[in-house]
Length: 542
Image (cartoon, rainbow, N blue to C red; front, side, top):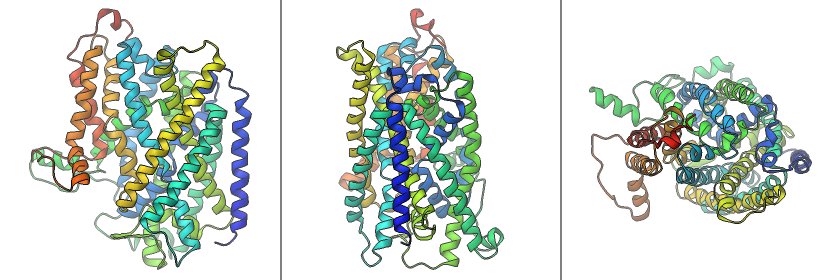
């Protein structure tokens, strides 16, 4: 790697700035509200940048080009339709309710509406799911370190299990540094660091598109001459992977496909309602804005900004398939038994092609973005646990600084949890090197967040439906229903024993990840509305 010294210097300067931001804001955290919500004083444009930085995490930065490289089309971008509509609903219904009741943990709203057991159940679902999602996301940026190692040692590349140990050590180090930084600076440090990170990543995306177009003969028009397959450059996919003649067969085909117009509208609508309306990690960023109007502006504009970003990232993947498939024949490309490793193709490009200095800035930005999104996850996990459980179960001083110390200690504890999940993900990836990053990250939300969203939908959109007991039954039903429809028990059992646990009804679809949250939500709502809210609780309906 040419200019390695320059890269390391820039990485060092970048992290010094980030640590400086954390130390600066550590002196401004006077109470729990300051530490968790920034005193609701963050300007809307910084909240916007933080939302984007969370969405354009290392998983998206590397995973989405991988989808473009694998599919050679834009069907993944169909998900943007539901993303936009969901943000409008979140801004119009969810956020005003959270501001109205002045909650810190959004699950406090569920206690006001239904009771403490619903709040605790929802918080447990969040804690488990966010730990799985953020922990699996933690593994992603270590891919870049593997690519750097292999690039510097072309005759001695790391094998799958060597990669596991290498990435395991790296993610432990990243998590420990992030835990220290988050525990010191709180949410303000995370958000203002995100502003810096998003600028760096935008620059990296712009350079990548510019470079690829400049090095493919004929630019975009030249690239199109190599993209002539039946699915190349498609934007819309209507019927799915296995079109059928009967109406139910067509519906089943759509539900069993990842990226269709229907998944882009209905599936991603429910995904975004869950991630942006009921996930403490994301909503906590929105609640740092000065009021609900500024929060809504940041939320909706982030959806609009996502559109060109998504197309740019997918374009990079598509152009990489042309660049390495028809322009540059590189024998050192990262490979799997099935061909080029789409999860590592963009990291390889960053390390192999980007000029010294810019490469160092991008590497620092990717690692720092991981630390930013990881830091917010730790902050939200610690906040939710402390507010929803610790302050209720254990005698806690009324002193604000004492409560902040408890949240900081909880941050460190969740860092250990995320390390364990990250190592487990690296282990699974080493065992199954062809797994898709996007599927891993989004899949972990799908099994549980439908039940979480379903209870919020009942609480926000009805006044007389839902009870403590009914909600618990509904959430369990939603989780079990999605697990069955996605064939999760069979997949897990087959991974453990190599045999099949049960045979699905042939007429039922095995739903893909964009549909899981929608299925869980509908099942949860259908069960929860069968129970009538006591009059004393119904008065707290939003």
